[in-house]
Length: 426
Image (cartoon, rainbow, N blue to C red; front, side, top):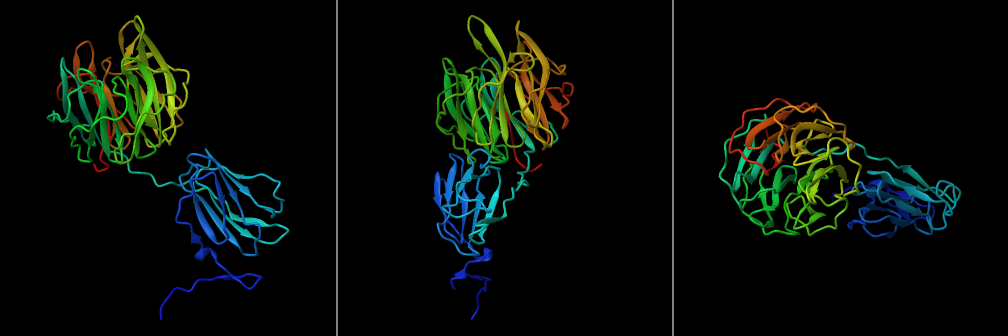
């Protein structure tokens, strides 16, 4: 006969209690606002949508054990509350408030006796999260040359832009693009003669797929970025009026329906990731008898929740682009068109906590409606745009955020295009 022998504790009542090695892990992820816990069980608690109040057993014996784990690292946003149900908790009666509100926390409690009651064996927060490998390559796609195009240009892991690849999908201008799934990308929305919501997925070899029927409000002049490590978000734009709604993209590239907008509706803004799993939308304009330029920003949490307007820093402008760089989640906005219809090349660095810095003197040819993406794991590239005429030049950004001089353009000169990172293989 074969089998596994586990260590178990004999309760004072003579009933054998399950030890830590033999905990019964609940197969259901707990998402509700309440849970009645049972001794000997382990629970995965997902508080993405709400706080969870956990009621402990009303009677317990020495050695009873229960474990709770922050399933999606969201206890910092929505905490858990422990109701000790008439028994003491760390020597205090159940009139005391017991809460745990740290992302990534796990709580392992054991019942001692009537005096001390439930005692935590540990309540550690797991700070070391697995980090997805960064994208190594990039793709520029779509745009306007005097007519709409759908061609693309791939960027190697060393920042070299390749010749035109014949376009796939509906030719259009002013779409947006972002990475998703860790190593793939998506182009979406834009203007093909009228605003559209179609999307085109890009696999991890940089191959663009045929049109996918659009989801959400058709619009152009929007922005898109990755967030949460493997998802994406489209936001803002012009649909006939300026909007602030967003559309989340799952880690398999499925676009969700509109989420009610937060912040000032505007077009021709930029977006990028920061801090490893969060994102930021920034700058843009509305037309009201002339362009009204903005420098305000909106932060996006690692759950895709957009925050209200943050007072702008730096030169108000539209037609800028943005990308992440560095090993600790920095980013930058650069280029665009400022008041007086003046093209600029200045940039604004973004810290790993989402703070936008003052203007940095511009490098390279001033232009607007270019596109940008990360590449090479920790660097970025800005490319194409309008200088008053169509351009195909690029500017590389080092892993310390320094923008380099112009690199002679490759491929068809155009503006109002989009770019995104793809592939974790160099």
